[in-house]
Image (cartoon, rainbow, N blue to C red; front, side, top):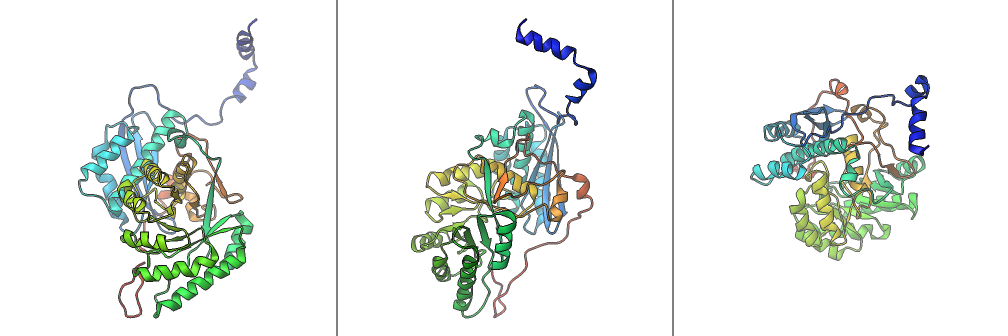
Length: 409
């Protein structure tokens, strides 16, 4: 008897109880049924508050498959939600897997180049399209964008003191940390620069030389000469990068800073699409770029940005301050992007954000995040929890100079 026939016969006589035990505990998620097209039937959006506002997008289809996305929230969140819903009539009836086509529909037909609100809306919708594509194919999204080029995702967390840095390393095994040590609006500026350098030196002394340290000026610096002094103050600390030391509008001076500084320069969280990043990268203005996948245009756009950077030997360390879905989308990006270096991470298991998703959030282990193997993103949002997390008015805190004039935040 052939082996195939033998196995078939054996399965036929298995006790019913044993055969029942072989069945999955839960029914599988809806899959593509073989029809030539999926069609978008609905698009929904929510603003929820879990410590800050988060904007979520759900795209539904005629075959029962839906996808989730996260749009950037920076303050005018109702405007972002309304923009998402305004795109709805443009997308209904279309196949969600035609990501390039639908992205161009939203971007091109908006006519004017988008800013914060439009690009955040496009990014959130784009995520949901990829989630549908992965679920329909029965594959994780990263398998649709080149497959894995690494087995786990290196990440860092913010630490605001030497004591916190040592605690985080002991708890999570981080090999990288970012000191969010904002500049104070003091006069003269040299006092603030000296304090910045002293805090950086204390961080380095606390963690030793086997941990990468990053330092963030938060785009507060308007005058380039201050940025040059910041870079000089950080040189003894040997950081992985100095982030947003100059305003992102000033790409010429960012390039000059990179030429003059003897430490790596990073920027990009406030830039949008391949078009702005192309200008930054070809100006040789950064060693490391930091696009935000919820703002820069979504997963595929960020892959294009990373490809431009790769051609100039520039690394990618994505900006990632938002919720658990944003982290998961970034994990898929990082898994399939050769010039990825490290991901910003905020633990969700110890935050109200954990209730935004069904199941357990991904957590850091020995300084790394695991890559999922479930179809789509591998996360389902908890719509029931949304009902208990109503949005609240929110914006970043204002800041003023000693003379009362508005400072950058």
